[in-house]
Image (cartoon, rainbow, N blue to C red; front, top):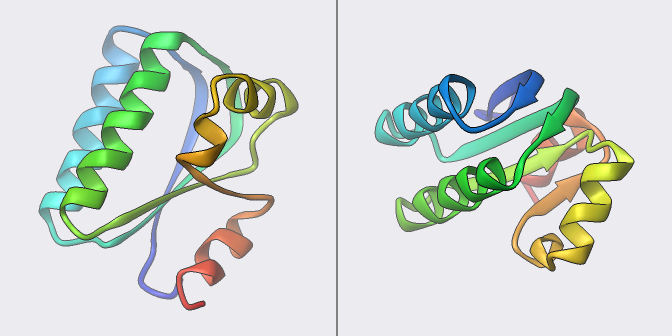
Length: 106
């Protein structure tokens, strides 16, 4: 996959165990030297505001370590939230997982 690490997220991302697990997984990948990270959000049913914070933290942590974090397969509601909060300018969002992976080589 072009050296990219893809995390396929499912269910709800909310404050608590789910959010902590995501944070730890992303920190581990960056710590292990992974520089190309993709979060596939296709099966995310819900994300709360605290977890948007985790995504921002993950993005900043990755960037500070020379890595890049991209999101793909966002549902329309999450796309709308990113637009309203202006986080769409922070994250690189791709329509498909293949597009996100391919975008690292551009």
